[in-house]
Image 1 (cartoon, rainbow, N blue to C red):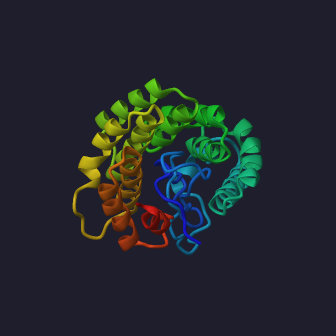
Image 2 (cartoon, rainbow, N blue to C red):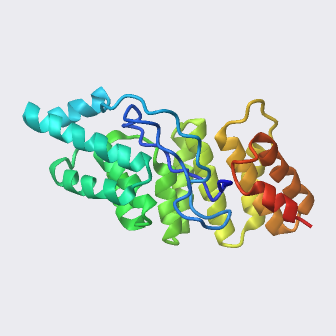
Image 3 (tube, rainbow, N blue to C red):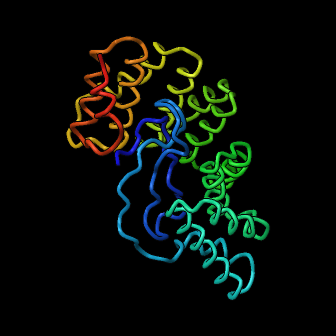
Length: 261
């Protein structure tokens, strides 16, 4: 079955503090919306599970909370929640994290994973609270695209614009910046500003790249969708073809390409 791409952006970002726990979190849409819907565009092929222990930086945060026995318990529960999240068992992850949050309000990894889980469940306001706390604790911009997409889901487009400006000035990496650009483009499209959304995406998405990354494919897909909505079928066809050539199983791009008239 083809996987949808370009539904917005963020994939949400994988939990930055927990990347050593289990397999890397699969990134996929929070819901099957339209092509400029929620952040987390295509699901990537999940690698084999890796280490089962939390990273040392997280272990140190947990160790500061109490005894060695308590630390071991919290570490095991956090790893369990991360594995549930990776397997798309978001309600299971939420139940574990709700229990942990009361005991670990200052542990960034817990706030981050809790926020991403709530985002997957469509609880935008609660996700915002947790992801903002994560940003306050770490100073990290990693999850700002997800924060922006929550604001977008709540109809707060002015906040999306503010966060996009913050991302551009924060020295964010290419992947994070691409996620933010996709959310911003989606926000513009939500308001019927299709030409502005195209103008935002086209410079980055139109570059010829060798060995394209996921961010390139998701930008191509969204740009193709926007061109189709604007009535520019030749350009829509061009970018859907790029997606199909790179990975025909990545999305419904082949179906949409075939449907262009």
